Image (cartoon, rainbow, N blue to C red):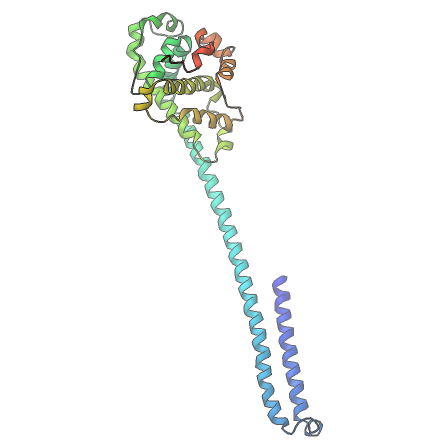
Length: 292
């Protein structure tokens, strides 16, 4: 409607200009009427041709401006449609990436990864000593040796019949735990995909307390050991767990006290996984003071 109105105004303006010129030309050709005003009526009539073309030129300027405005409007519309199409494509790609990760999570191979990870995580909940051993193995320096003294606590939750049997399978299981952590790291850093992640069941409520324990224990070991800092890489897992908490609408853990509140009465950790009481001691989650 706006475009038709503009074209109508241009047409009316052109018609008025042409009409005025035609009327002036007619009056100028009437010798008797014009003698009182000019001695060169025909010359003045032909001079009015300039006025006609000047008027049409003005209409042409208006038309040009109008066409430019319409072109800009069309360009904005095309850009808006392109932006919407790109957003739709990006949203589809985002959801597709999460779906692919979810299919990986549900695959038969990754079920083995999850089972092997639990073979490490559950004994780590039952034995603080074994937990510290596992944490030390995330770093290249100052690694702790697996101690037979931790076996009585580990034996409460493992299927292994002896310490040696547990030790033989334990390293491979820890490698699978690395895969699990890397998987959730990739998941957490899917840009602007928190809404999609929250709609998928990645069993995060099962992993969350143990992930937080790992993240805070890694940070504790990194801060308290200069050699670990010298040869280690920057920590990232705490940020991963924070992002996952945010995606699932949970409040991230900020300190040791909040972590202890999460794990001490946890229905899986404290009962089924035989949570070691040393995990619930505040001093287990603070950097030790070095006496000079």
